[in-house]
Length: 166
Length: 448
Image (cartoon, rainbow over all chains, first blue to last red; front, side, top):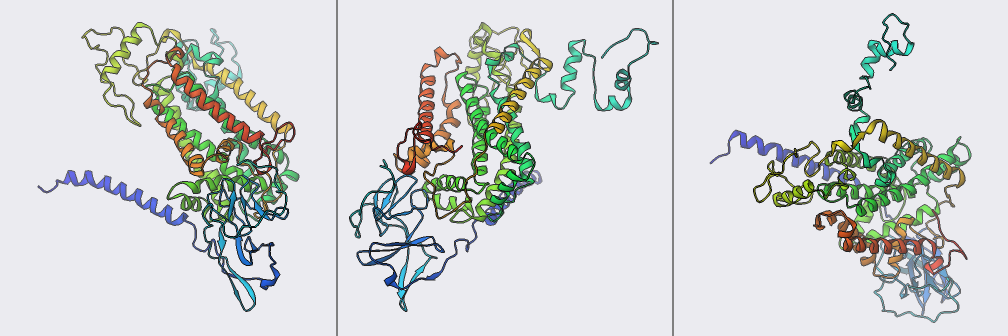
C-alpha cells in the first residue's frame, strides 16, 4: 500500500530534522578538523656529521629534536616524551634522556630504559647528503617498543632527577 | 505598603509612585497581608520564579543542603562577571596572550584583583560542585524520582571541569602550557580514536595558536551554552521533582510507605532519561485497598508535599540565600586580595618546568598514571568513574534514603571518594621533580 499524505508528512519532518542534524555535524567536523599543514615540517639541513661526536646530544630548536650519536650511528630524536608529551631534556651527567614529568629514562638512541612511557622516543628520518646531516621533520616515526635496545651505553654518572619511582 | 484608612490623608511619594500606572505596569505588587498576596508576589516575578512559592520548612536549616548547589551557582555568577571583565583585556593569540596578562597585572585598574578572583573562584567552584555531588549522594537525594537530575548534575560537573581545564591554558605561561600538555596527551591513550581526538581538540599535533584559540572559544562560548542549557534543565527538574529535603523527614510515614509499594508495583519502565511512569491509578494498592487523602500534585511523580510544614520561599529562603551569596563573595574577594594568581614565565615548548603537574583536580589521575598503564589510568579509570556516576541512580534499587539502610552503598562511596582524595593530595603536595616523593614541609611543589 502506498503511504498516505499524512504518513509522508509525518516521516518528512523526522527525516528533515535528521538531515539537518547530520549536516550540522558534518559542517562542524569539516570546519574543526586540524588543518593538514599545521604540523608542517620538511627537510632540515644541519651541520656536517663530524659535528656530532659519539655520546653527544645536540638540540635543534627549529625542529624540537636532538641529533645524537650512539655506537657510531646518528639519530634525530624528537624532544616530545611519548608518555604525556613533556619536553625531555638530555642529562649530561648520566648521558641519558630523563623526562621531568614522570621520570621516564631513555638512552641516546631514544630507546626506553625505565619509567611509565609506552615506547621509546619518536624519531625523524635522518640522512647524510653532500656532507651534511639532513633531517626530515615532516615524518615522525614511532619509537622502538619497550625492551628492544640495540644502542645501549652505560650510564656515565648520576641521574639529573632525584630518585624517581616509576 | 503602608495603608491609610482616611482617603483624605496626605499620601507619601512612595505610595503615590506605587499607585501610578507606569509603576504598576512594571512591578505588580499584590498586598502582602494575605498568603495569596505573598504567593502572587512570588510567581508574578520572573526572577523569583526560579524558586517554588513555598518550600519545606526543613530547607531553612543550613545543614539540609549546606547550600552547596546555590554556592556553586553564586561562584558561577562571579566567574561569569569577572570573565567578561577579563575578555576586555585578553587576546587569544600566542603572540599576545602572555603580554596581555602582564598588562592586566600592571596597567589595568583592579586587573590583578579581577584575575585573582576569577582564578580562586574557579578552584572553589570545582570544590563546591564536588561537595554538592557528595551531599546529594549521602542524603540519597538522587533516588527516584530524581535520577535524571543526578545525571544532569554529572553533566554539569564535567562542564565545570572542562571550563577549568580550558581556562588553564589561556594565560600562556609555563604553568598553563605544560599542565595542558600533560592533560591533553592523556586523551591519546583512548583506544583507536585517541590520537585523532587529541589533534581535533588541539587543532593540530602540538599546542599552538589553534589550540589556544580553540580553548578560548570553548571556554567563553561553547561551555557557556552547554552550562546554561544544563542549568535550565537542572533547576527545572528541582522544581518539578520537588525538593528532596521536603520528603526526607516523613518518607517513612504510613502514607508514604503505602505509596512506595504502589509505585514500585506500578513502575513499568525505568530507563536512562525516563522517570518512572506512574499510572493515574497509582493510589490503588495491589490488594485492592485504596490510599485515601492523597492527590496527585503538580510536582511530578513520586513527590508528596506536606503543606502544613511549608514556608514562603520569599522571604524566608531568599534572605538565607542572600546571606550565603554575600559570604561567598566576601570569601572570594578576600582570597583575591590575599593571594595572587600565579603567572610564570612565558610558555616555552622546549623547556618543561620541574615538576610539570596537571591542574590539581586532575593530579590524582597523574598520580595514577605513575603506577599503571596509561590506558588503564588515563582513560579507563576516569571513563568508568563518569559512567559509574551516570548509572548510579538507576543501578541503586534500594529505595531507602536512610543511612542505616544504605551501609554498603555509603561505605563503597566513601572508600572511592577517599581513594580519589588521597591520590589527589599525594599528587598535588607530595610530588616533586621527576615525580619523586617529596615531603611538602620540606619543599612544596604545588601550583594552584
